[in-house]
Length: 205
Image (cartoon, rainbow, N blue to C red; front, side, top):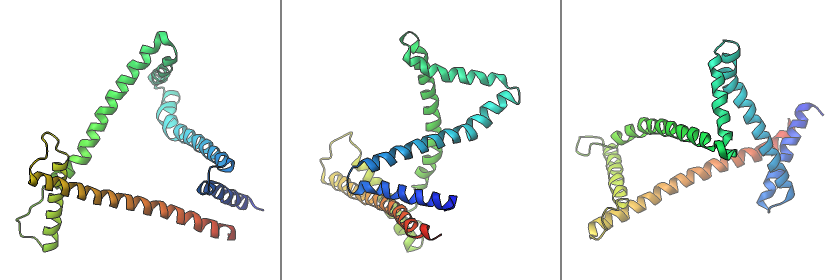
């Protein structure tokens, strides 16, 4: 049997072993689960070194003479001071700094991603448009208003108008969540279908 045939056989065995979880928890599934986690961890470390650390840190420091990059290693080692009570404050200082930087980057990404979506939600309702575009605009605006009303907790929803608006917003949320769940199920079914197709056809090659 060729090397490609051995790889195909191992892939089929691994797939069937993972599928045994559909019956119940068993040692075969646990074994292949640990094998998968180990392989994924090793692959991740390899990718981290070859595509991130080596080109962006090791080579600039060793081949290009950018020796100040050595301080990055020192900063990274500061994380491990959490295991030394006397110097644990160093790890906390580093964590707080990185969390602040991450919060700033996340806020910047949030602004770039969602502010255009917020501005795009202000759609014209009275401008002459084709009927399907006008209907789409009405649905979007009504959904935004009703959902925002549902999540507005500054005062109790006592009036019938507010209650009705909030109730409609809740139903629209359920529709949206159902669509998201449906797309997730479709994606998982696509993965399952591909894997079953692989099991049925891989051994022929």
